[in-house]
Structures are given as C-alpha cells and as structure tokens.
Length: 580
Image 1 (tube, rainbow, N blue to C red):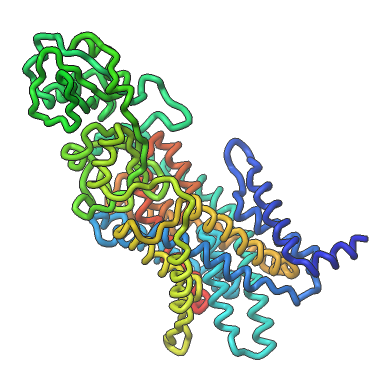
Image 2 (image 1 turned 180 degrees about the horizontal axis):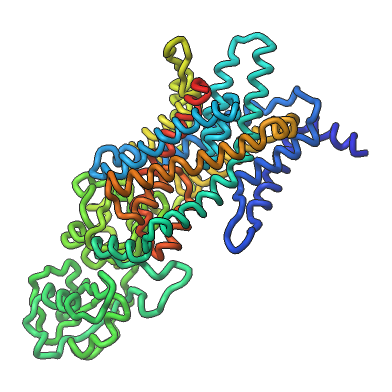
C-alpha cells in the first residue's frame, strides 16, 4: 500500500510540493523557547528535503524546473521592487557611513566564504548554500542555482549529472547553516555589546536625543483613549483670547509644557464659524472675535482643559459634517527628499497628525530631526480636506486596493531574464548574474521608478508579500524535493564541515564589521548593530537588537544596508560558484 502511495505521489509531484508548503508553514509557527522559531523558509526546505528523500529516492526524472524558475522570478523581482528606492536613494544621499558599512560587510562576507569553502574542502554547490544559510540570504540559493545551470548548458551527460549533484548540495548546505545563521547571530549580537561593555539602551537614548525622538505607543488595533485625534468646537468668550491670531493660539499649545513627547501637544484650528459663514482655509494671521466658533483638532489629552482658554464647548453641525481620514502617503516630492520632520511639517500639513513613518515596512522613531526620504510612508490622520491638501505636497496616497500592475511585473521579469542571460568571460571563466540577478536588477529599477513616478507600476503591499513569501517558498520547496534523494549522503560526507564553516561565516563578517564601524566609521553602536543586521539581511536579528536597545532607533541604521545587502549578497551567489 505504501509503495502504491509513493508511486501515486511520484506521478503527481505537485501534491508533494503543496505538502511541503503546508508542513513547512506549520513547522515555521512552532516556537522553541520564548521567541525563536525556524521560520517558514527553513521549515519548508527541511520538510521538502525529507519528502524528497522518502518519496523520490532512486528516481532522477523529477522535473520541477518551470515552477522553480517562475516562483523564484516573482520572489526576486518583488525583493528588488521593495528595496529599490532605498538602494538607489542610499547611494545618492548622505548616508555614506551606512553604505560604507554595508559594502564592507558584503565584501568581507564574500572573501570569507571563498576562503572557508577552500579551507573546509567544500565544492561550489556547498559554497553557495553556505553563503545563503550562514548569511540568511535565501536569494543566494537561486542565483547560485542559476549559475550552476549556466555551467551545465551544452555540456555532456556526465558533467550535467555532476552539476545536478552540485545543485542539490546548495540546498543541503543552506539547511545545515541557516539555523545558526539566525539564532547564532542573535546570540552573537547580544554578547558583542556586553564584551565591549556598551549600554545599548543608553546609546539608543543618545541617538534619540539627537533626533528629538518620541516613539509611537499606539496601533490601529490598540490605543490610549487620550491619544485619539478628535475635533471639538468652542465659542470664543475669554477676553484673553479675543484679538489673538490663529497661529498664536496654536503655538501656545506647543509651549504649554504639558506633554513630554514631541508633537503630542500639536493642536490645529481647522475651521472657524463666524456668524453663518464657515471659514475652511483658516489663515494663520486671522484674529479671533468674540462669538466666533472655532473647530480645533488634536489629541484628547491636549484638549481636556481647552474650554478654560476659549470659552464654553458647544455642539455644532460643522463638527457633525466633518469627515476624518487615515491615510498612508508615500513621499515622492524630490524637493522634500532628505528634509527633516520639522522642515516638512512646519510649512505643510496644517490640521494633519502623523501617526507613524515607516521605511521598508519598519516603523521609525518620530522626531523633529528625523530625515524623511522618497519612498518613506507617512501615516497621517486628520480632516479629509487637510489630508487631501497634504497629499498634493507630499506625494502619492497609498489607498487600499487589490489591483496589481501585472504589465509592469511581466515586463520586469522579461527584461530581468534577458539581463541574466548575459555572460562575460573573465580570465576564461564565464561570469553571469543569472536569471535571479538579472530579475533583481530589473526589480530595483522598477521599484525606484515607482517611487519617482507614483502613478506607474503599482504593486500593493499584500501582493509584494505574496510574491516574496510564497514565491520564495515555492522555489525552496522545489529545491528541497530535488535535493532530498541525495541529502543523507551529502550530510554524511560533509555535514560537520559545512556546519563549522557556517559558524565561521556567520561570525567573521559581523565581528570585523563591528570593529570597523565602531573605530573607523565611529557610528553609534545601536545604529551600527542595525546596519550590520541590515547588511546581513537578518530581520530577526534586527528585531532582537531593538528589544535589547529598548528602542526603534536600530531601524534607522538598518534600511539602507538592508537594500545594499540584498543586492550584493544575491549577486555573490552567482559569483562564488565561479570562484570556488
């Protein structure tokens, strides 16, 4: 019966593929200890290798090539699209220290990987998987696989068989090294600060002081009632207020000293009702008259005692007719690129309140000196008319939509594939980006173009997640199932060497980059740790650093190196195959 079942599954490999996905995602949710988990990608690979070893052992006719190529293409294009604005913008703008740290890390990582592969006697396949797992960069599997495929093109059957074995070795080495690449790195970064006797929370506070930062405490799911943005109406009766300008009233709240966090005390007079006339665009130099009804918006905590300043609070139809709007706005205005929070919102956004600013999906600590760049998402709440006016200045509204510009995706994949087919011989050795590297370059371009031309090439956040997560794991499942039949043999012959080489490769680039960034670049230690986790493309480690520092400040150091690390390490996957 079992043999009949296996025969059925061999005749219908998509069932095995879906089983690897389902089992991998389930295993990826299991927590070991308080917070550590294998994650979906490693879990899918492990389940796929086991299924491949059990079901397809002794059968070499399995062909998942098309599914593997297409799924990896979607994944790597989405990665490029996501990091494109920060990769290209990071090279152009003033984050020289972050760029330097990222490039230093990636170069040291490549040199270390080549040296360790040769020192431990690992072949090109193991070397590619070693880099992918020890540096937690799953895209390396795809570019290394593509480079090996390029080597097999037009070769004899015996060489082709050897290359197929090397492609299996990539998956095995990745599986062996990935766990330490994540868990080991988290431990290493916890220890490294203690060895240098650095107080991470104190260093984070120093960085926050430079920004004037105040981290957000609320989410859309949970909030303090006192932090809600609300409109209220007051009738002007207080003689001390009569004759004052709108700007004077608003400034008085900022100077009240009742609020510790930056921008908490911000209050706007958004409308004034004088007689039967409602003034919507309220000028800052307009003076208040007795009997005026002013509509002000701000945090409830800022408005508790406002009636004492103005007069009685009243119910007015103007408030009842007001429509609020919560909207993420992507900064695309090149004139505002690199401006600080204060430089932007002192001149623009009257009546609008910034809930958060995110970069590559990570929330930044708000502060007057926080620099905002093209591609950053500013989450704003306010009266709809005020929010719509701000959109005209800031850039493009990220309104909820399910529509993806598949024309852009299709063209991007075609161009990327053509770029990846180009091979240049250096010293007689063909060097190629492979399909993965080519599509990554294409994704970078279209992601950057989207940040410059926001009406072009929309791929909603949910779709980007599907492309990256599901695309990667489909690819990983194909690789694992194909590698399964010879995985045990590979582990017996080289498992210990691969693991030890992985420990070294995870540790060496991070330790050397720490020393380089601390003494040569002189970065704040918390920002440096964020930059290191970004260059090493390990989000789990970055989240651990945030917990240790008790601050979101590491995100500032993380984003540009993360974009650069994604590009360089992915390209290294194709390069190391030729160097080992």
